[in-house]
Image 1 (cartoon, rainbow, N blue to C red):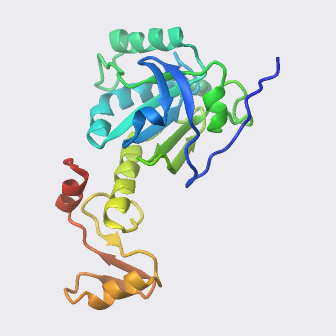
Image 2: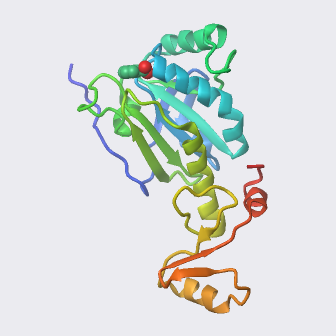
Image 3: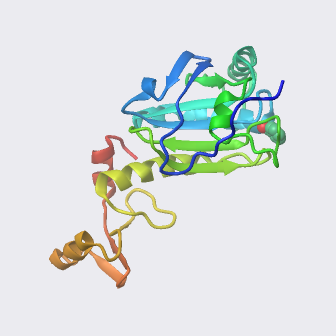
Length: 237
Ligand code: BEZ
């Protein structure tokens, strides 16, 4: 029978599509089960493959760091539940890689044999593969809005430091109403946003501390100490 799933490509700013799914941690109803949390929903091509294994070990090792940032990780591939369980058990019991060992993946991994969720999230990209999900990463905020999306092809593993940096960056943007320059990390200066907006003009005009530096009229920055970011995000960074 034809796959009846309607393929959609959600975009930044869209409400994240809702779904019900079976996972390695039981059934989930998205987004209802995750209200008030950030969610990183990510797909991988297939269980028992090497790049995916290295990624799951890395995410498994970092899971507590994401938890501390009020972020739930949810994985997905179009494999079945028993494959997921066997693969995660193999990872925990047998695989030692780059100093990582005995990695227990405690976050939910969705079984999506029907491709229901993968289709809703545009994770099947037929030019790359008709039968495996690409390496997609959706950053979904506590209101259920998609805030950033990263896609990687099958053969290239993701950079998990960048995924964490992007999450911290999005949370910082929200908490301080700023924009963040290239390669920003907590402690770096931030961009006083929206050139031309009244708020910014007022902030610049009222800033007698000399804290705001304007490189030109459209490009102004100010310090944002790491401790302030940590205090707002509630986590040592
Ligand atoms: C991997 O995870 O190693 C992989 C999966 C699908 C295609 C190529 C590589």
